[in-house]
Amino acid sequence: METVGDRMTRKISIATPSKPAICSRCGAPYRALSLGAHHLNCPTCDCVIRQAQTRERQEWQRQERDQRLAAANISPRLAECTFERFQPKEGNWQAFQQCAEYPKRWPLQMKEAQGSGLLLWGKPGVGKTHLAAALANRILERGARVRFCNVTEWLNRLRDELRDREPVGERRDDLGASDLLVLDDLGAEKGTAWALEKIYQVVNQRYEGLQPLVVTTNLDLNQLECGVGPRIFGRLLEICLPAEVKGEDWRMRIAKERQFRRSSGE
Ligand SMILES: Nc1ncnc2c1ncn2[C@@H]1O[C@H](COP(=O)(O)OP(=O)(O)OP(=O)(O)O)[C@@H](O)[C@H]1O
Ligand SMILES: [Mg+2]
Ligand SMILES: [Zn+2]
Image 1 (tube, protein in one colour):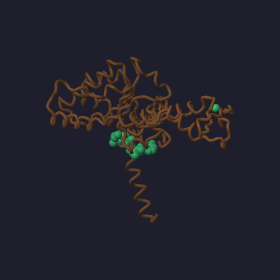
Image 2: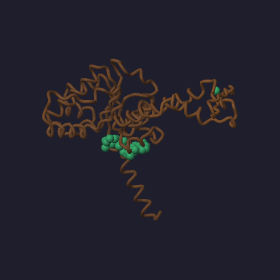
Image 3: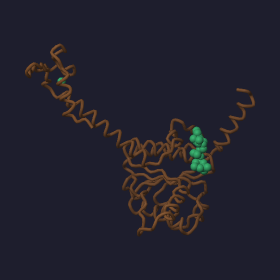
Image 4: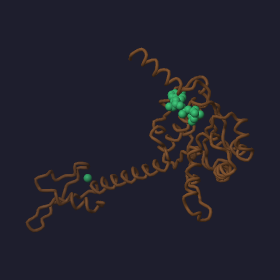
């Protein structure tokens, strides 16, 4: 990669006496240098160097952001989920408010013993994943390491990895490395003893480490307690504020609207 020094040299060597002999940024005069037959204009200010440093910093920030985005596991569909694209209604107003307020307090939620997370629960298609993704996208933009994890998918991947590879002691999950973890669709997985143990480890890691956690589930709180058991459920309730998301099944609404448009020939 070209360094500031390289760029500086290039800038000096392409300058000719016919170009205006002042810095276009700050107006500082250039110094004329003659090296044998070559005539050079040499800046006397730091503008070129500072400009190059700013560009290098921006490039570094872009790469860092891209890396965080890749590590966040946010699919193209989830990346489209924003608060602006969410239509708040009576039944989801409170959950919408809580999710929209969440990034405004960030990063204060980190290392908070209680109430540092959210538990969004409600029937399928009411917008729980959309709200959790909108929250995660905002926090990602604020420079945090976010990890969006669909519980069933994560467990399947973990199981495949364990089956395919020779076990080398206890494998460490990467979920603990994130500032904010979203566990999407908890309770939809097959609640085997192994699966529950894996979920317990992750929840307990967030609990012990005072690390923020956002959970979505389409079980109600009683069903969730039965599904995941009291050890996981108790920890979740201690660190996550439950918010019910109510309303119509948005997927049905989209399907009906499409059908209506088709039948009316639009
Ligand atoms: N209030 C809303 N405004 C705009 N779009 C919405 C709203 N609610 C849901 N959607 C859209 O409807 C679809 C389903 O929403 P989402 O996936 O968030 O539901 P869910 O509650 O997580 O369902 P499930 O329990 O099945 O996972 C998504 O495309 C989402 O963007
Ligand atoms: Mg969902
Ligand atoms: Zn200058």
